[in-house]
Image 1 (cartoon, each protein chain N blue to C red):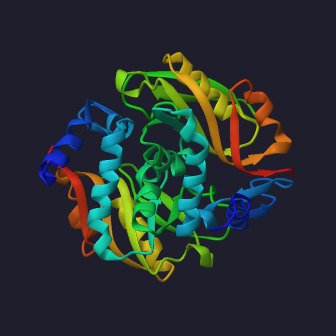
Image 2: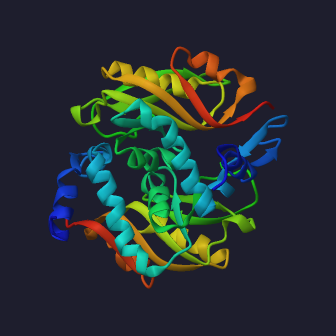
Length: 180
Length: 180
């Protein structure tokens, strides 16, 4: 058995840094090598579940597309359901929506508002915590539907972008934090 | 224990038909109630894995966004890795690409071509088999990278659209088939 720190090191080695993507000066954290590695994929979900299990959530909420990669597997590991947040016009039933700020302009996420989609205690998930805009919009959607955000769990955090501070007072946890 | 048919019936009851979405005359199969139900979510992945386990794949490939919902959880259940197919410009490393036909015009999917992403025996997955265009593009991408498509597994099949025939000779399996 390796230590938790060793486990995190194993995952970190499978995050590939791509310089200057999508724009010059940005170092993109590419999780595709981790996703393609059977042991690392399983381990990432296990570690996210270890964080979330004490929160006793009944539902995991995440946004397309990359939040869908680990959100449902995490929900299964927790014995919870999974609720989709999508870009406008993609969900076919009645929705609630929340705006969030991108680098240039605004974007919007929608969630179904029917009773099948109401979590009481909810884990917000994304693969990446950057500036926190997406996660904050997810928290707002959960609360619009009467749910409580028990916590936010991420695979990767870009700590230098201050997303954790912007998410407060919602508690955030990331498996892998980067300082640059 | 319920029978396999009973299990499929349980899942089917959680697929919501939305008339006239996204256009008049189309009956949309909404899987969000199934995704939000902890037991059904787990059961869907278990049944997809029951189909795929004898295929002994080392990797599951699926396209954004809805293929990401069950693909990675299915990979974990199979002890396999997960490889992402995305819309053009989303993947940061070198890619291969394949075109497919939509109702109006063409679309394109990309997959990373570096060695971390090469499956030898691959399961192609999507939540929905409609006309088969997306799945067929995924099969082409797998073969461009030297992999073998061992099978294609879907949650829902719209059998009246002939996707299974268009996918042949790739073998296809769906948990829930609809005749209209």
